[in-house]
Amino acid sequence: MHIAEVRAYVLKLAHDQVYLGRLDDGSELTEDRGYVVRAPWRSLYASRFETLLVAITASDGTTGWGEALAPVGPEIPAEIVGRLLRPTLIGARVGGVRPAWHRLRDLMRERGHLTGHQADALAAVDIALWDLLGRQRGVPVAELLGGAFRGTVPAYVSGLPADTDGARAALAADWAARGVTLIKLHLGRGVREDLATVDAVLAADERLGVAVDAHWAYGVSDAARLGAALQRRERVAFLEAPLAPEDVEGHRELQRRLDLPVAIGETLRNAYEFRHWLDRRALRVAQPDVARTGLTEALSIAELAAAHHVPVAPHHSVGLGVATAAGLHLAAALPDMPYFEYQPTTWEAASRVLRAPLAGTPGAGLPLPDGPGLGVDVDEDFVLRNATAYPSAHPSVPPSVPPSVHPSADPSENR
Image 1 (cartoon, rainbow, N blue to C red):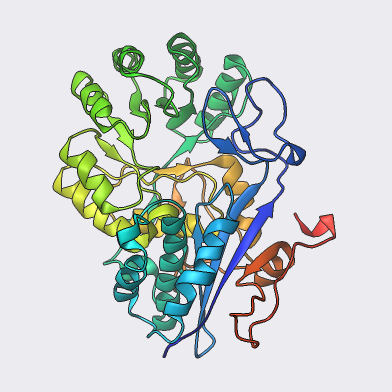
Image 2 (cartoon, one colour):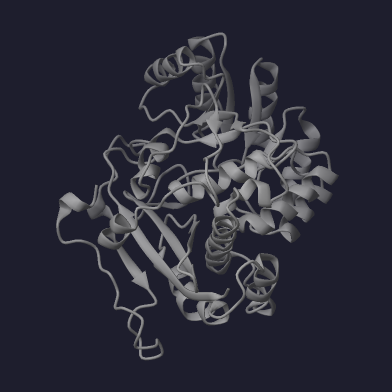
């Protein structure tokens, strides 16, 4: 059995609520504004849920699906899949996932491309290969990864998309009434402002704990002040991404000054990067995102973390149903996995690419999708109607490859 086709699909889906709510100035992030920096954060954000799906089809017609976390410019990793990875995959044996991973990674390795868009493309392909293998063997991906430690994955709620602390506290109280015990706050607006939000949410319900994502906003001094104040409060789980993402030594210094765990991982793409952070003891919670690392590399990262006695709490932000399913299978297969990140708005949007919605709630836990492979059924008709396919009809592509599928002209189909 061999790989017969590899196809990448760029999706940009409008949703009734923007990821993490309004901008700080109270305005809406609308499609006509394109990509914008959401102050005080420094990165670009999109108004739509943008992602890259990859379908890998075997010679018997079985298809496995993967997804990259590519919320800005998913066309870029899509071109990498179509132009660089696909030619190497066509004709390869189905089932050789790890050999394929090493072969694909080495294509651009000496050019420094184990990170960035190349890593995004590799992650999507790797997930698709695991899904394909699971479907052909009739077993879940978690079983292929060595077996599930749990059938239901504990989760925390990430983000309270409201404009004021009072409104955030009300949302937090509602989540607590539904059994949620931990909420991560997306902050980084200043030490005083962040602590005021934390206090408002903690006061909403005595059963609630909080974590703080500072979105890389602080220097060491302010981060240390924030962290010291947080650890004096009860029910604070961790401080995520407090400093600039490249500042390993700064995070190391900060972690040495705090008892509160520092959580890092969404910007790191491979075990080499994680090893440096772990060896420097610059983090106490590792947060790889499977849609940025792939399943193969995520397992290597998890083993490194385990060797340093660091728990793994997978990151998950705007990946849709395929990335979510892959993250849940990874989380189920890890021994020291305290919780999975549940983004309410993303969860609503995630199932739009699936024939059946994802099950579970953060209060009760998220069940491992049931079935072979990733256990989800991608709605191929929806994808074809709403995506651009890669490779497009370039002269280098064999004539048997169908032309690109462009976004539907009917807005009603982009739901």
